[in-house]
Length: 175
Image (cartoon, rainbow, N blue to C red):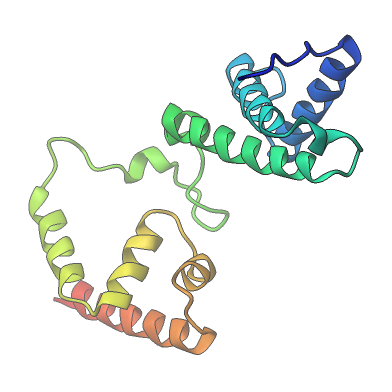
């Protein structure tokens, strides 16, 4: 037989609302986005319903479980919204501090020469796997350090791969 839970008091709702705000703030997300707030509330309540007594004290284990569940559910909601909505980059932004060209000038024209792109991707295909992963990571905006951590490479191994890729690119450009 299932027992009915008592409704939350105004004070409890306020405490949960502050907790949700703190989690969203910690995740660098908007506290006013109603869709994310509702997702966070649902995640919190799912943990709360499993064991309401785990929230008896401020540092009880229920709060930690709720925090993790909220992060998990909100991250999933953000991914389903589409990464482009959260990570839009202006094409008017310069490529880097050293290269003042706007990013828009680097985009391929839809009527441009596709052969150069095909040849370049063919070249990348024939690289050793680690060098190919590094090249595609750099193409997609990653840094050598980010790729090293992501792929769990040592500093020496990452340096060798980078040097191999650099030499290969020099040969590619010469031919």
